[in-house]
Image (cartoon, rainbow, N blue to C red; front, side):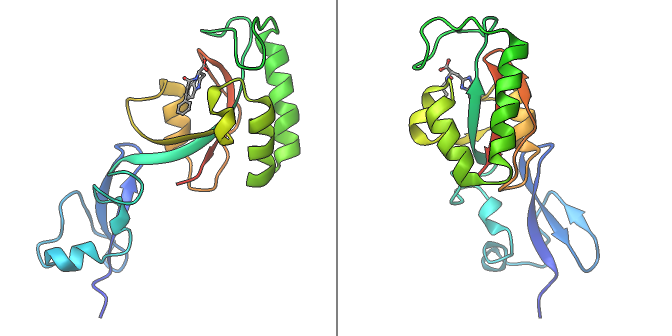
Length: 167
Ligand SMILES: O=C(CCc1ccccc1)N[C@H](Cc1nc2ccccc2[nH]1)C(=O)O
């Protein structure tokens, strides 16, 4: 008989918590009635530290970045001196967003060709990261996504981005 307990990830705190779907209880600490072995086999146990995604509180995401003249570093593998305005960069990114729709494959194709980030060579993949590693607007958007979900256009000091959470 399932205890009803599962492990969920708190997006706001970036740490796992215990939730009981039957009783609707939630707790930061493991329920005392569960043994360590039972906890390890709960649904969502991958959120516990050392999980496949590189540890508790990490997510994996890819992005497509279009820089502009006011970017922190207005240069990229694509263009030595980027002079477009932020408005032009946003319009360009909206065009990519329309082509991508909900297609991961199309996103990765366009990120590889057009992203002004060095991650373009990895189809936009940034690998696993935890809170405190990326610029705050990027972190807030990325940690607010479910796996498989695209962000809307967000702006950081690097330029304008679309993010896809992949794990
Ligand atoms: O900082 C990097 C490298 C990021 C990276 C992480 C992991 C694997 C590959 C690349 N590139 C910057 C552009 C840039 N700014 C960002 C801000 C947030 C997330 C990703 C970003 N990429 C630049 O090129 O100016």
